[in-house]
Amino acid sequence: MTTIVTTTGSNYAAMSADRGVTSDVIHHDMPKIFVQGTWLIGASGDSRTCDIYAYGIKYPKVPKTLLDKPLDDWYRWIVLNVVPRLLNALPKEDNDGEAILITHGKAFYIASNQSVTLAAPYWAIGSGGQIALGSLAAMQYDDDWHKNHDMKSKYAVSIAQMHDPATRGTIDTLISYHTGHIG
Image (cartoon, rainbow, N blue to C red):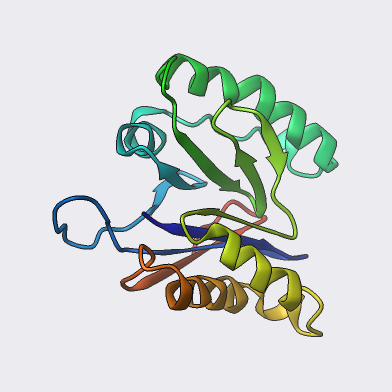
C-alpha cells in the first residue's frame, strides 16, 4: 500500500510519498512519484491501474495560454484533455485506483471513476491517506504554510507511517513550480 500527499501554496505544489510495497510477498521499496515532462504523478490502489497512471498514459503538454488563467480554466482543461486519455487507458471494470496529478504548481485529485477535484491546499490518497489528511488539516493553519508546505507534506507521510503499517520506507518529495520546472 502507500500514502501519497500533495500540498499547494502560492509558489509551488509538492508531492510526497513513501516507497513501501505491501502484498502477500516481500517487495523491494520502489518510488511512487513519477515524472513525465512537467507532470508529477502519484497513484494508489490496484497495481495494474497504478502502472497505467505512471507509464501507460502520455500526459499532454500544458499550453502556454493556460498558464495565467484562473483555476476554473485549469479544471476544464484537465477534464477535457487528460480525463479522455485516462478513460481510454484504464480498465473499464475493476478500476481500483486513484491518483494525484500535479503540473505547473497545480494539483488535481483523480478518483477511481476519473472525476476530477482540485487538490488544494492539500490532499492525500492511499492506505495512510486519511491519517495524512488529518495531520494536514491541522498543519494548514501554521504561519509558515506557504513557505514550507513541502516539508509538511513529508511530515504528513511520516505521521501516516506511525499509524498505518502499510506505509513504510523512505519518503520522497518532489516540487512542481508554476513555470513547469520539477525540483
